[in-house]
Image (cartoon, rainbow, N blue to C red):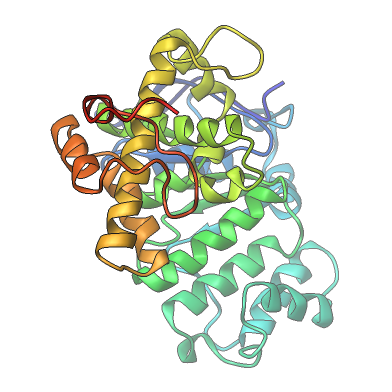
Length: 360
C-alpha cells in the first residue's frame, strides 16, 4: 500500500490559474522523490497539500492512510507537528534565538524541550561547535543544517523540502544532500522540490510536473538513458560478485527501483525474471558501458597519471560520451589491455579480435 497517494487532485487559485490538474501519484514508504519542473508547474502546491498547508478543490491527498482533506484545522496542525518535517529554502529561523534554541523551539511545539537531545541533533548535522551562535552568525549552509536538525528533532515519518539547496554554494549543497541521503537510508520518506538536475538525480525517483500535470518520471530522454546506464553498471558489478558494488556504483544502486527495473524489462534490457537478469541486448549494452569506463580508467591512470579520485570521476563522465570509434582507438593506443588498474576485466572489442587477442 502506498504511503502517499494523490487521487485525481485539482487545485485552482482562481478561474485563470489551475496549479494542479487531476494529478494522480503514488509514493512508497521510505522513498525519496524529487518533484521537478519549470516555475508555475505546481511543485510547491503539491508540497503544500502534502504538508496540510493547503487543501485540494477536487480529489484526495492521502498520507499513511489519512485523507488530509477530511481533517479539521486542529487535526492538520497536529499532523504537521507530529508527522511532518519541513525544510525550506528561506530557513525561517528565529533571528534572536541561537541554533540550539531554534531546534528546542520545535521540541516545545511537539512536547517538551530537551536541550541534550537538541544538541545531539545539531551534532548529527555537523554543528556541534555552533550551538550558541545566532542565525546572523551562521553561513547559508549552516542555517540550512539547523533547519534540517529542527525538522528531524521529532522523528517525522515524512520530510518535505522546498528547494533546500537553492541558495547554497556547491560545497554546502553537497553537505546538505548527504544529510538527506542519510535520512533516506534511515527509512524516512522524502518529497523534495528542486530545480537542480544534479540534486534531482540523487533522489530515487524524479517526478516531472508541467502545467499542473505529471509529465513523466524523468526530465529528458537523455537523462532516462543515462539513469539506465547507471543501473546497468551497478548490475554488472553485482554479476561479477563485487562485494563493494553498492559503494562503487551508489547512484546505480539507488536508481535500481522496481519502477526503473520494470521499465528496463518492458524495453527488453532485462529478462522477465524476479531477480534482475540481462537480456542479450541488455548484456551487450552493459558490456559496452563497462568497456568504455574501464578503458577510460586505464587511460587516465596509466597514461595521464591522474589521481585516483579524479580518474573515477572522469571515467564516469566519459563512459557516457565515448563513441565506438574513439573507444576502439583508445583500446588500440593502450595495447588492448585485459584489465583496468583495479584488476577488473575489460570486455573485449572488435579491435582486440583484429589484433589477434582472443576473448578471455
